[in-house]
Image 1 (cartoon, helix red, strand yellow):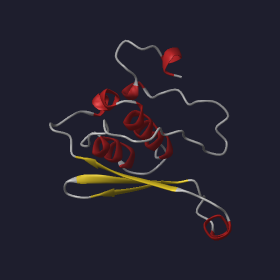
Image 2: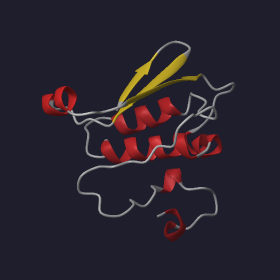
Image 3: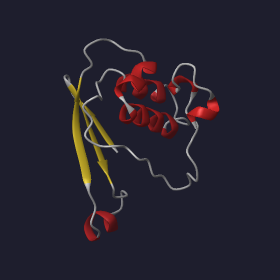
Length: 121
């Protein structure tokens, strides 16, 4: 996963390859890239779900991956994602990470209003 932030857009790059020479040089892998424009208005982190499942899944995945990082990296990246409009997504994001045997329950900040923890997982 690579996120490249520009003044007017966010470029999301997702690869099927692991960051290993073997995967990049000797296997058939794919890279998906799409630019997302700035949202038309300032939004909060909870509003990501209104863009559909891609933005929501990306934010929840980043939050999970960054949960043990020092500083405010998790909050920084999730709030950065909220600045962009993901409604024009051309793909579905299906997260695959070694060790995840079942879906991770959504953090309370990523649940739809009125949704219980059981419904979010």
